[in-house]
Length: 285
Image (cartoon, rainbow, N blue to C red):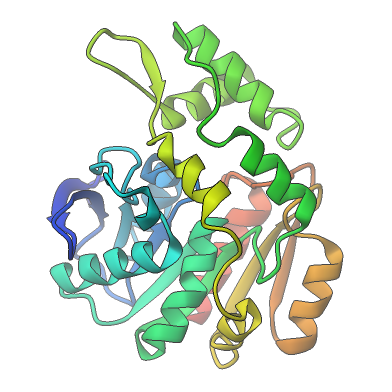
């Protein structure tokens, strides 16, 4: 087992160089792919991937415009349909026919699109604090800051900015945890100054593309015959109890796991999350 994973790149269908990391490549069972949130990247899944890689092959990836992946000159391509196509291209590149998806926020939405477009290849899904509907208050908050935060001049400022953005939703984190969260969301430029590790134009896409095309509930219904665990940060302004009630009405076997003291999103290192994901992998061969 390679605890650090093997980093590499693949080429998207439109020629971008996109980054991924491959953990535990020799392990049996259906592999797992981890898809990050809107402004985040594959580094958010490092601890989870290392935890799982003694049992499963785990793939983490940077969507275009994030992390080590190339930015897209056409911000209109910063859209779930594009990210899903990139994900299928990656899985085809790796020769992976069937996959379990762990998707945080945007990544969870992408999982529903994957189930709709190539459902026979999706063995199951863990959705981290996301549903077919998004609470309007949460949308407004995310649209307000994405791609608009002020540049920072040091890691101390990066940590403080992370606390400003996420502090309300992640109470009780230690100084060490805040530093780790910042290191995953920022990366030093050529001058050694940390910068948010994402294309600011992602914010333009969020604000200008508008509402998701099609019926998001139809996408969710593509998961009807698949095992699905929903991790819910009980303080979330994105995923509300009303939305969860609608989800369970349409999918009565949905496994909802409440994560206390967390909003949007749980970090996946919480005991409730680890236990739920471990149990899910026991269920899905």
